[in-house]
Image (cartoon, rainbow, N blue to C red; front, side, top):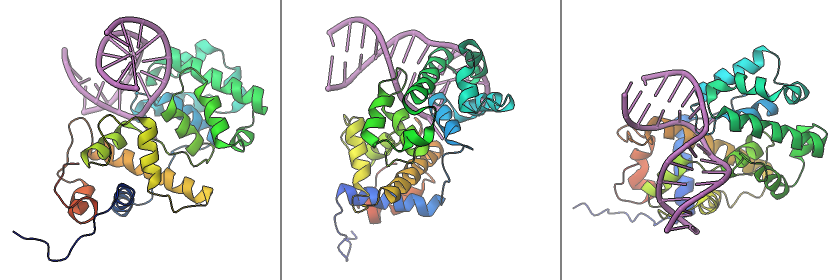
Length: 241
DNA sequence: CGCCAGGCCGTGT
DNA sequence: ACACGGCATGGC
């Protein structure tokens, strides 16, 4: 029994998250998220992707793009019924159309339709305004803050929850805020907000990538890039990912 | 056919 | 505070 001859330092959860991040980054490389042409498109995509496969979202975005409607004023002027029909492919169209419209109204009334200006608002303020809109919950709010407004908001999703649980990094009952703090703790040494935002950006994108590849409800851990480094970096004992 | 996808809300315990 | 069903559509 092998008894490791060299002692492997016991890492705390923040260090383990950081190791997990580095492992994913090495395995997958830069993700270049969010896949969109503009902040407005990012916002629309963030709303449309709720509970929906991204391929379906692309069809909706394509509908809008073909009609040259991925512009703020044009999109806001679009009658709600037409918006519904154009975003139909991504599902939940009633709610999503209403949510999108409410969001465009917020940006119009509070920031003169300038996403730029919205992006300069302090993160907690912008987050509260987003969460006040029916249909925008914590994950969508943080996705908009991070990928459209370049704010250092860590996005927590089901994949991160699964990874954290399976690696013993969070209790089973951990809620959104707990998981967000946990993920952020990996970058506690980063004081620069812009640099922190870059880490948040990459981290969430990597989690989604590995999630799609291996962490579905029926996990495929056989070729998971986290598997090779589990023993050495994460906890020193075999754990499924 | 059944399950799932880059969630959120309202309701019932 | 948490669990659960509904919301809609399309890919596999």
